[in-house]
Length: 469
Image 1: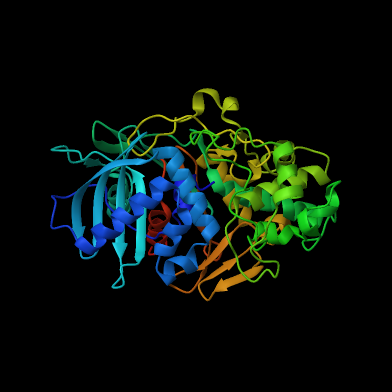
Image 2 (image 1 turned 60 degrees about the horizontal axis):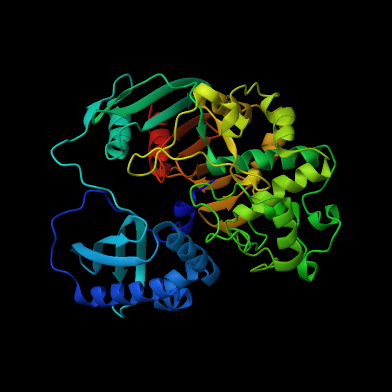
């Protein structure tokens, strides 16, 4: 699943390098806004912060999503104790922030009306002095090595990237590790990583299976599989959970970030809490299915309901319907099953983190796998006989002219105006990305053990490098 930091800032679009430059003149208007933000953040006035956003920010982020993000940040970092100006570029100020629990980097940009149009608050990365990363990558094209190096050079030591290149169904594996400030090759194709939200594609595949087996229809209301009415008699169909048009929030409102550990936030969210949410707190931003709004709650609810209607567990369905069929022998639910093959996850500073445990929301992001198994799953997509996989790729909602939603898959238009099927993921210590071109039967899969790596552009560029041949 997209880890919480990444998912919360999906709409706070900012590409910002970790190397903090020498301080320049502080933008005073932006400074005043940063001080207002600090006061409201420390006071818990999240509606006040939302009111500070410009119209574009408010259109991309709901008030509810803003609150969810800021509650998480307050839980992770605590209140702001002090901040030090680092650098400025135009109306963008960068601060090193001392919080109660951890150091952070705060980035704020404002428009001409002193409204916030860009915001980022991430763990602070210490600048590496006098130790430029050495590029020792071999065995791939110069272009591919540069793409990988440019992305991974600032990752911490002990970072691993496990990559599968698939060209016309032929698989080639490539592993990267950073040791002693050098990026070099490693054979890690059998190593296991958390794949995060790519799990949603597998959950969608279980949905497609159930539809083809005529156990349900995509437009069936899920509430009939529960022995209690949903709040306000809400109607939620299977398709809307899979293509994120259900109107459900990103996370349930009774998943309390002030009480759970941000290092393992889903562990104790069980069936009792989910049922309580559905009965007492369920709220939808829309019921008309006119917008696609990313929801981990929706995908988790989908996985749980599919198990419920088939009197099985999500894990058992995965094993029977997908892993066994496609010979994915290194794919699991729960890190305890992986043992020695597990690559430990890292935060942005290189510190090892605990693996995420899922209960009832496992369908949103609870799978672990390796590129060997993921390649089998992708190559199965290229076989027309796999009807359930084909169904997941059928467009079910149009976001805009460049983006559609399948069941689980995001369908994007490439530079060559071809349909590209995409999904990514992230948890507390892992980031993943997967993209495939059905027409050419090409794909790139990247699994990593560093949080918030944001590998999507890297994955797409690597796919493009294959298609130049």
